[in-house]
Amino acid sequence: MNKKICLVGGEDVHKRISLSSYLKEAGFDVTIIGTSTHNFPDYIRYVPYNLVRHLSPIADRKTLKWYKTFFAENEFDVIHTFDTKPAFLLPIALKNTKTPITRTVTGLGTIFMSNSLSSFFLRKVYYMLHRSVKHRVFKTIFQNYDDKDLYKSHGLITDTNFGLIFSSGIELKNIHKTAKRNNTPFTFICVARLVYEKGIINLLEAARICKDKGHTFKILLVGPLEENSKRLNQDILDQYKDIVDILGSRNDVFDLLLTSDAFVLPTFREGFARVLLEAAAVGLPMIATNVTGVREFARHEKEALLVEVKNSEALANAMIRLATDKDLANELAENALKHVEKFSLENVSKQYIDIFNQAINHKT
Picture 1 (cartoon, one colour):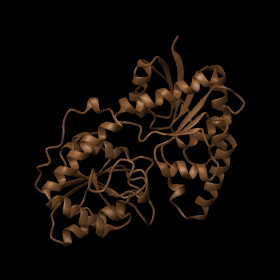
Picture 2 (cartoon, rainbow, N blue to C red):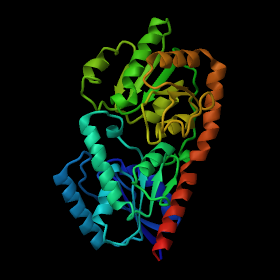
Picture 3 (spheres, rainbow, N blue to C red):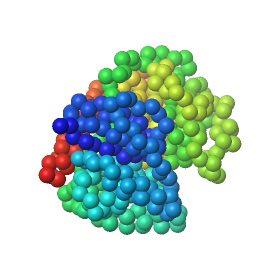
Picture 4 (spheres, one colour):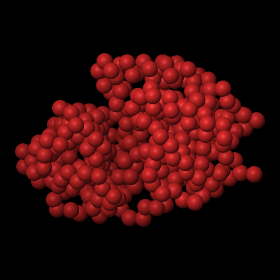
């Protein structure tokens, strides 16, 4: 008899489809619940529900009630969460039940990078909620050491119920091409949500510095604008339209990567920078910041050039160096292409399947 697993997430839960194919091969019947509008293959039972990403007591209470009802009517051998809110809402809803719960912390979000009073308050609430369920969770999976250390230091996990799996994996079997990297002008690409914490301002400023120093590069900025503040907004982006091609959300990201010469990610912090795996898998040399979620994959002058966070001048210098040193670019690209194999979905899925089986066997 197949084992029954439920994967719980939010709007990007469709990203677990590839993992689900490996779970199916390993003898799992897969149900996914989330808020994604994507189509799911027939071997996955997909159930949509309502989940509000920000703190909302009324909406969260409705979600808790939905979880209780759904899991009372549907029996599973193990339940796994992949999103910030379900990571504590689901164990709260199922606190008095016995189905094993595992979860992945894919990142800590904006409230851990902000010094505002509201973020300070939200962090306190976050800690309180996680402490209340730490004994209900069989295992918490972290994608970097710093997130694990933060959870341990605040007592959000026990001394034993955690593990490390770097990244959610990348399906290398679907990638058959590498970038030719022969553009004139040299083309940089950054793929990210356009929010201040992704270092978007630093990239824009670095582009201006490169131009002022006499270097003509093509710079592609790909991703949806998700901020409208004094720090980052459409008016600010418009000021750099003469030197940066701001493409917005695109469905052809893979093709854009293939037609670029190098990848740039000046982020302030990541859970694990999956986009670096995608860039590495198509053979692009990379520039990124030396921060959590980047260091777990990219090493300085091995797979990437790592620069100081929030330093536009250092970022510009790295861009100039990479664009003008072909041997360095080739070496970084080759190293990254080899290194990314360790992060294949095939390897990552084996680690997850082992944990799910441990949880099921522990229950029995």
